[in-house]
Structures are given as structure tokens and as C-alpha cells.
Length: 354
Ligand SMILES: [Zn+2]
Ligand SMILES: [Zn+2]
Image (cartoon, rainbow, N blue to C red; front, side, top):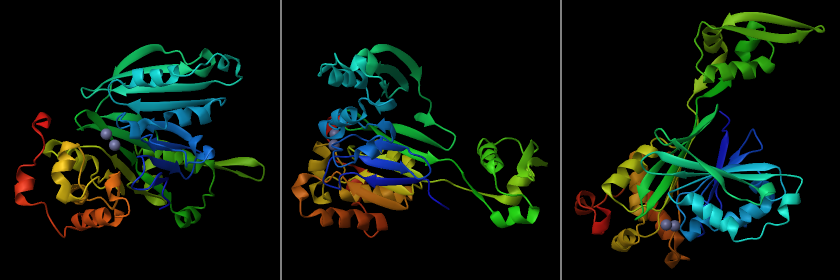
């Protein structure tokens, strides 16, 4: 199966958090978190359609100005998602600059920002470059089961974690992946063509099996066609397999509630990006700073049954010793060690998180 998404950690494990998810079959990309993104080439930044921000601690949001600067003067709409207070923060960042000349630009760069709340309420507003980025009225709506984006091929879901403030973790789930069995097509005498894309779409939309489906192609200057029930066609020429899943988890204290949410969100992920800020010998420091240890990250990845795990957001104190964190995470992921009973039963985190 050809993967549709290609995720990469933008700055390596010690740098600011940001995971760039490139699309293989489209000039498009998504970004999880917006730390420094200066090392991303502008052509990649310009592919971004949606940016999902966990929270607005500086290391997760400092790339905003760079992003706006690259997109200015382009006909482009960018959608941003963030935690409570996010709309004001976006407008304040924009209000820090003078925009008297942009109204003459022939293009209109638009930012649509959505502020999410733990109770499922959301606020959305847009600003336009051609109107000097003045905030224009909020729309309120409710997010169901954390689903922020639900497109034909994939969806993005979020959950709130506790980081002493609400902090969002995200997962990108490709819907079922439809493969065409070329040999079966040949057996039926159906040539490849535009009808196959329509067939894939009909199957992904889960249209009823008895729906008549038109197979058509051009032959000797005229259109030839056959009709078959969708279900027959599906079983004879397609193979439907589960799609890719990419989960992004950062900045969370280790608590039973957070652990359950993280494990559920990352269940079966093909790629799990998870913060591993401290070695487990510094578990108390990690708890005070509301971060995970490498051991906790690996343990949750193992419980989630993730296929691959990329630890990141290492504390700068481990510069030159990154290998220690990676190894600790990998050992827990492989199940070679487990949390001490004392720690597992009664995590030591400060009272205000309980
Ligand atoms: Zn933080
Ligand atoms: Zn952070």
C-alpha cells in the first residue's frame, strides 16, 4: 500500500516542537505545533492548509510570525486550531505589526482561527490581509468527539490533556485505503480511467452495495459503458485496507487521566510522536514541570500498540545525551522494564493537578 502521509519532526528531538505531515498525492501539508519553523523551506510552508497547535507556550507558537510572513502576498487560506484564549492570542500577534500597505495587495491571504474548549465549545473567526487583518466576528459551534476536520480521505481528532493548562493532543486518521487490483480489472476487460477515482470515492462514502455503478471509457472515438452493482465491483476489483494513523502528543503531566487519554488517542498509531522531556530518574522534576519522562512515553506507546514512536521535546539539559532518553523510551516501548508498582499506582504529581 502506498502511504498517503509522510510525517517528519521539523527540528529534531531537542528543538522546538513541530511535526510536518506532507501529502504524497497532493500539494498539501498539515502541521502539528508551531515552534520555530525557519528550517522548513518556503515551498513546504506554502503547502500548509491546517496548523494544529497544542497550546501557546512560546516554544509551540513562536513560528507564527514566520508562517504569516511566508504566506503574505499569496492567495491562500490557512486554518489554525488552538486552546482556550487562542483567538485573542492570534489577533494580538497580528496587531503587533502595522498593516497599512497590505490593503493594496492583489491577493488575499486569509487566516481562519478556531479556539477549542474542553467542554466541546469552539469559536471561529477569520481575518483577511486585504482588510488589514482586523478580526471579523466570531462564530460559535460545538465539536463532537473532538473531530476538527472530516474530509473524504481522512479526519483529525483532538483531546485535551492536563499541562496545568489545557493542552491539545491530535491524531490524523486516514479513512480506509482503497487499492485497485489491476489483474482483476484486466480479467473483466475494464480499462483504467477516471471511473476508478469515482469508484474509490463511492466506496469510501460507504454507499449501499446495490447502488448501480457506471464503468466507462473511450473506445474508437466514442464512450463505452457497463453497469455493475457497487458491492460486486468492490469485492471483485478493490481491496480495502485500514488507512494510516499519525498521533501527536506533547506537554502533559503524567496522571492516570492523561495516560488513559493518550493511550486511547494513540491506539494502533502507525506513527506516534510523543514528548519525552526527562529521564525517569527525574520523574519528580518532570511532574512539577508538567512533562512526561521518556519511560512514561515509551510505556504509553507500548500500551497503545503504536507501530513506531518518535520521542521529542527533550529538555536542553540532555544536550549531547539524547541517546539516553531515546534508549529509555525504547526499552519501555519494548516492554523490557515497567513502571515501579509504587509509581504506577500512585503517580506523584503536585496536588493542583488532581
Ligand atoms: Zn508547555
Ligand atoms: Zn513545550
